[in-house]
Length: 424
Image (cartoon, rainbow, N blue to C red; front, top):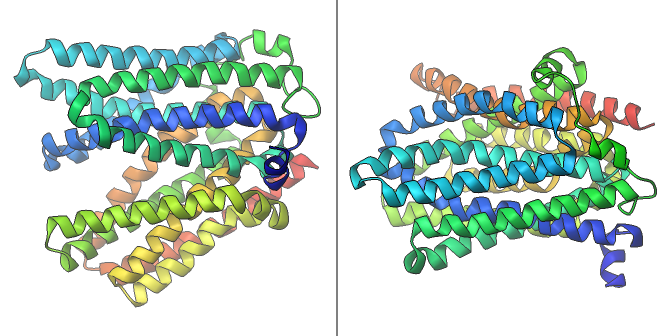
């Protein structure tokens, strides 16, 4: 164990907190990935033509969920708020479980559609809360060293959750799998409480991140504070821009992938195999990088380089795809970009919140991670359709992607410089 701690840059005082963080993130993403295949099946069964409405409903759901989320964050002690949030989602799952057993078969499609929208909201909030707790528990310096390693637990959890559903869907059925996620969410709630206790007594670092008094009180402030801060603080405006550019470019690449695959592959099994190979490569590269390279990269090159890495890769990727629009180029770009996001960009983005107030870690961060993220999806989709309609094609849309990626590089440099100034 001491050898492993030294190999991964974990100091003796941090080991227990890192272990709880691992269990916490593993449980959160396992719970989600147990449910994700059920959502995707519901999306297909409900009619592909209805998916745009489902995504729009998810965006509206994000907007409606933010005020009560902020209300509870303002008034409940941290440990109570975090565990309450996860247990609230557990109760929702039990409600879906009961409803799907009780309603008539012809009404199940409506329960299933509500579940589709609910899971899109659930995913954003449970992951955002996890990273908020990380920003409470660890300092900025620790975040640079450890957030990539902690992210590896999520990658393992995602693989485990998907494998659980694959193995148990036949004997248990999709409704009973919801109860597996309920158990995992309870483990996440207990892990969060334990981790915040370490943060309060200083066992996650050299000094307490939060006093017992701070944890015992709610964060206070207005329900709308997160939304207001997102629009009025230069720091959060630029984090918002970073998120929007990332999600818009992700949507562009998703649509380009659909266009190229539709032309190149006519067989359903071949397409499924292609997408599975992408997921497999992404997970393998992500996990290896998180375990062995993320912390080293952020320590060696700094937060500016970590934030600019994915936008710079996107400049190169969209340029190459525009010049040579082929399946091979697309697959290489998609794999590297997705792995780069999970292994480098996401941990670096979470480090940005280690230097803000505790209220901002939950309220402002929650709004950016949920509503802004989904808004970027919608903007990307709405922008792609008219560009395709006027005949830009993959080369022309890739050129637009290059321009947006360059803007994202500039934004990343500004953000990283501002964060560095706040730390020093």
